[in-house]
Length: 442
Ligand code: SF4
Image (cartoon, rainbow, N blue to C red):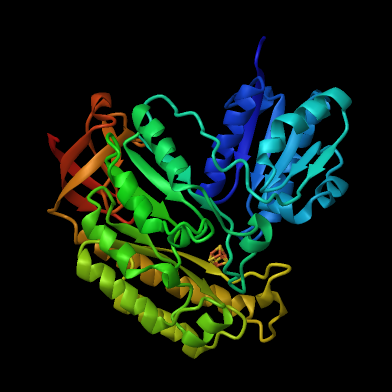
């Protein structure tokens, strides 16, 4: 039977990107093949995220642009999934009448049945109930030809309730996959030629707590570290309060664990950390950074910072700037605080004006640009191990890969180098990447 065409728009984080890969895998089994041209699609899925400001407007604009396709082909099915779908449910369909489907974060596994029902009845469907266990966690996405890196979801949901965050409300309670399932999946990926895996979860450091058999995230890293064919392990994202000494030691004891950690701090002010319900202090965060750098001096540390949280004073903001100066992150995702319905922070008074938030964000970003460049420049002259991922997007004569510290490196090279681990001398540093010269293939 001829396959129908599927097109997926993905907004947001790596978890969403990976969820979209799972959706494509599920629908592939139901007779749909992914296409690059939305105009040819029989099924369009928008996988949404509600973390960023104006996320909803972006999704509505996207849906607006799809109206003409629906007019041209009334049999076209348009569905919205992900966090915004979870949050709004049927309200989406009230506002966008030509939408056929809304499915929540725990309902990905229902997608084939929901699509079949819509195809057969022409009715709309909304499914946003939370399940005891998220059945899509173990769906194995296909591996694109020639790909050497892959994501793997090890847990989903979060029990932390940081006061600004909607994730626990939209992704549900924290749930970890079993260690044996994850190890099996990584072995399958290794068999497909994957050399680098990134373990995904809202807070991977607390992996295993919901299973209760004594296995923690460090155990998982040791286990994956022993799987043949896998050369590199990465993970994201981490909560400072759950970064144990044992986990820090993994950076010296698990050879395959890459020397990079994304460790969101959010603010350098103890007062704001408390209002955010982050459950660590500024001193705790410095202590984690100190331990990481003591055990692994070249580790790259990236972070998240929110400016303009309700009640953030100039003094609080200066504490953040001071922290940035002392730590000198390799890179930073920085945002203006934006209110999310249903969160504890939405009820706080003493809002910071948009204008002050914008000024603070500019200061943070300018300082970080300086630090990122400094950290990159310090690598010039180093010999770095690079896993070559693809031909460079900017020049067909160059290939692109990453250092173990997660910096992008471009250098002269051809197709045969893809999937190889090579040694490269770093010759130039820029804001977003490094340039190098191939020394040898390892
Ligand atoms: S740890 Fe905090 S910020 Fe991260 S997902 Fe959980 S509640 Fe949100």
